[in-house]
Amino acid sequence: MTKHQQRVAEVYHFFDNKDTVLGFRKLLDSAMDTQDMEIYRQAVELTDWKEQFPTSTEELIEKSKNLLQKIGKIPVKEYALGQPVLRAGNIIKSYGKNRFSLGPVSMEICKGQVYGLVGENGNGKTTLLRILAKEISYSTGELHYSFNEDPQDEYDLRTKLVYIPQRTAKWYGSLKDNLKFVLSNYGINPEENETRTLMMIARLGLWNYRHLKWNELSSGYKMRFELARTLLRKPEILLLDEPLANLDVVAQQVILEDLKSIANSVNHPIALILSSQQLYEVEKVSDKVIFLKNGQYKDNSELKGDTENQLIIEIDSVGSREELLEAFKDFNLEKLNFNGGVYVAYFSPETSFSDVMTALGKAGTDIVYLRNISSSTRRFFVN
Figure 1 (cartoon, rainbow, N blue to C red):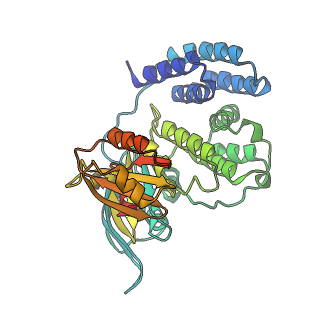
Figure 2: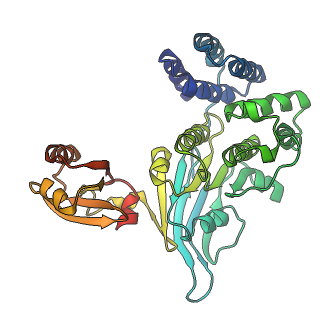
Figure 3: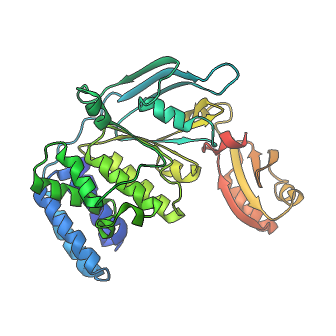
């Protein structure tokens, strides 16, 4: 079964289980993979119908499956994932003696993968993204790109390599016209331009906002429109600085799921790096998590080592330290730290997470939340 067929089968599964919200977004992903303008037009028409009749769930499922059947019959050429699209070797950025310094940073970035960039404010995340985007220079090291075709000029480079800052410039005029203007710069004929623009609007959940002005949008939707404009250019590397800022928890999860799915496109995968303060949400979708502290680079592969099997649990409890120690008296508890309003408990490798949960339950400990961070970059924050 090809990757396209797998994605189509996954969409059928969502609709069979009446998960129409996620199913419809995945349906549009599969439609976009075809690069077929007739499929695009039908997907756009279905989106318009869906917004007009939001409560007609059964009919939506039927119409979606009919379109999905057509999508499944179209052969989609799968992009052959190969060498990294970006290689950084011992990159260092210095700002003078006794001032902030970033690096050394060595990393490889591949298409079809999502890389989370985390760390506290002022630790170099934006600096690293801007270096990778070739917006600012670095002091020493090497940076190599392997695009499908060598950029012909600076404009071509900015098509393949795109950086979106946390605060974007204001758009003027119709949002839809702004998006169409992007495609007109690439010589797309008017009919196809309209279809591709509406398809991108539909995919990013912007259908009911397409006729608004920039100042009528929330910051979250401004980010989505900026993403739409960028994705119409078909970048190969996309660098996002704090795309989750000012979003509620649900909106964060939706945009991360969308970014993951778009990066994993069958025929146009993207290498995606996004910075964020939302560690746990980013870890869920990232293939690799990069951590910066005082400009120093670490990633989650470094969690493997002497403490690879150590059980580390983050505990938010209204109970006292003594209550927790009593609950853990039968375990080999190596240390219990109080860190940032929560406890972090370190157990020997033979201890299981389920046993710890059972012990806390039997002790009647009042727990607000409990999280196993043994394989999380959260460990870099608490150590």
